[in-house]
Length: 322
Image (cartoon, rainbow, N blue to C red; front, side, top):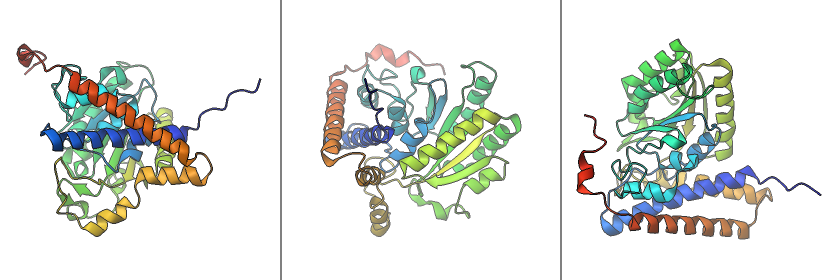
């Protein structure tokens, strides 16, 4: 009997990107319709999340930032429980207490989501040191996600310096999305590529097209393999773009429409779909079925989240340590 053909991982990555986009778009709609808590979306940055997280293994850890939904969903988080968390419901991963900005999922190795700009950079060295000392599973590395704004914080240099000096197994992933809240990147830093700052700390570094999921995945696999072989940190800069505002709702009135249009023409989901179509790896009918599966999954997630109960008032003082 002829063995079954292995599924094309490129199709799986495309569906994962579609899921992230649909999940965040649904939260945007819920915010607009009901006034529920807003979120920091990663619309336009899905290729980075999927390409990097798919290069990690189960025993690796993730320390991420406020724009984290893509990282968690790419890691396998349930969109229903994620949405319940954002809406403050008891079935959320943190019992509705973290909102969108502080979700952690221990069972998936997501140690921390920090809303403090650069906060994850101060934590990742400790997590990586624990991994190196055998507190986690042997051989595990830690991937940390942050933006170009965090790279302008002093903790960026402190973290890289310590990781290089102590040989910590950290994959630094800078999602250079061109905007630091409401300020353009080129107004705050004199260099074009943040990797040059990492290289100054003797950290091996690479810049890649962050809107090309295949290029990101190849670069991430190389980075992960290098970290496992050397025990040293690695810096991966993803050049991408945040296609929605800093925090919902945000009309992006401060963005040049031509700039936004140029980046929308490089939408990572559209690029991946077109590449697969051109290569004959999929069909329009298959892509339509994929979108239908994604839409059904996110609709089910929304029903689950909205059907989840509100926390009891007595929960207000539980899980509080300071």
